[in-house]
Image (cartoon, rainbow, N blue to C red; front, side):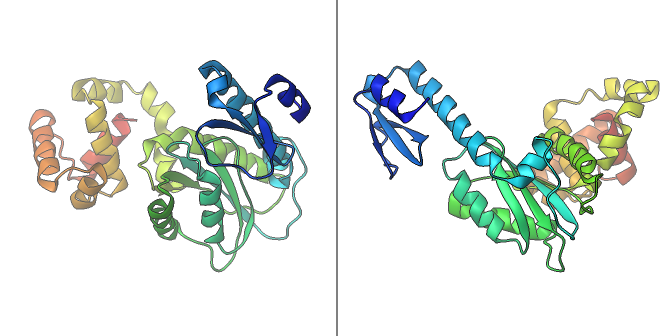
Length: 284
């Protein structure tokens, strides 16, 4: 749809280069500016349809300008670089009007970023060159907490490995992309995880599913969603009850009580790493 067509259909609307902040208008990106339509002249269905169409159009146009988007998602050519790179997948907890500003500030916290862009309303990709100052998991967690305070945006991040820019790079990315999409929901907001965090889960799921013994144990344990979350968080925190209780937002004594009751019911102590590992595998 063109600006001229919009003006003919919505005669009460107007175009300007600057975007207003008024909630009385539906504001649509077009022709390097913004078309404003009074909400009172639109139905709820029209508002939803217009926002969906124009936001998607703007997103697609913006993405085409990114060589890395074309390479990773549109069968484009590999961007030239002599360095190894890693892909950082960013999953926002929910859509935010500040997401673009958030991504800009997040990107600026890294040393050598090749590219960064949103591929949809809650998922972004950041490509980082390998360098002596590359951030580790704890560094990135600190970044997320700092930016949450400034933007009220929460995210979970899958940190890909550094790979040489060879013909195999796209294969590494496709697998990492699928892993990031699959496992991001298993982690808490402002968590950062990599392949090592999910390798056990990823590599053993099929074997576990075929095991009669594991199937029987799982049936006998009768784990509900709440206790599965406890087990997964305790596993991620390497059995540390204090840090687990903080992540779950429950008192340490409450968690201790639940673990004791679990032991009484099952004979498995989640304070013991062997028992915890078994329960973690069963809960996958």
